Length: 433
Ligand code: PMP
Image (tube, rainbow, N blue to C red):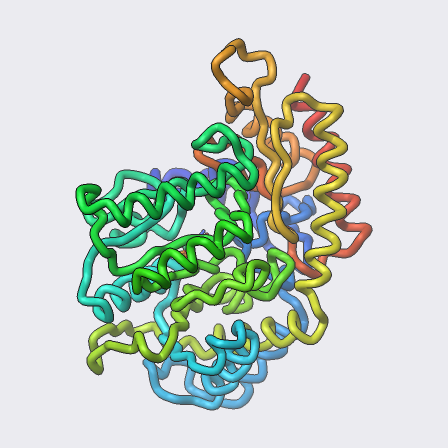
């Protein structure tokens, strides 16, 4: 029975397992927004494979694309050889890239995870510039391998200079809005221009246009344009990590498009593989400083992932799902903001498109020095549990794990959106008690 599966896996798997702790379910079937557990219960899945499932689970066009490769007799393992499947994927991906990059792009297949593509991007920037330093942001998440970890918000490597990521609700400069973003940009400029700061001229700046794991924090467009100008003026390649924000999620095909910023390097994974593992780096051809074989990997040629990914990219483009994410996301944000006025434990509601975060706080905490109440991670965990009890899967994030994150598929219908928010509101009311 499913309880045996849960028990055995909790005994056999490493203490590092994450999602399985807060989501003790045994998925056996899934379609669209819905996962069915081995116990027969059905769940609305607003985690979507940590933002991977742009089209939800087992979308017919994805399944069809996978079947087509299998039925064709094409080899499933081809290392990094050229194939019709890879050709079709690359063509489809290049058609989606921001103009100036699409005209002059190189693609590097990495594999198989987002963190692998982050490593490749960092190494590429270091190879191309001959420099080693890196500019990265507080609260960032880029993966769990060593270089990606350095770039993330935790304990930094000596070569990483940590910069403040702009944020309204817990603004590091205490003002938020345009002024906070402006101060953040100036902080960055001063640091780079101060010979004593140690930042020197680094090999790259890496940023998420919307921080995901960091608690769904959208960077203001004007700030992103400033970062573009600061890096351009100093010859520092700008790496946009669009692993989570890409493929329509934020209401544009790529999140950098909101600001018009064209990065030098884009790191892509999750949704580009249409549920299967796939990760690539796309960059300006002038950065292509690799020697042949300078970066390798056995699993760079996943044909099924490329086929599933090409089908996903095409479906998102043809059905204008980025626009759909923008409209529906705005509507969901508005309803959540309404909920916040009735529930003081909701400190902040934010997001872009269908990447939504609800930060839970302790409104009664007594700290006159604080501008906003402290985060409430225990309440957030209780809300997550209450959601699961009501058949809704959500994930937590943020530096204190007090942000409830909603990452539904872009195929979410109006009715499903209402059902998700009804269950969330009900769970919040129950957890508050
Ligand atoms: N970058 C970002 C922005 C991410 O959100 C993630 C995963 N959540 C990664 C990189 C790492 O991807 P992976 O887990 O596939 O290594």
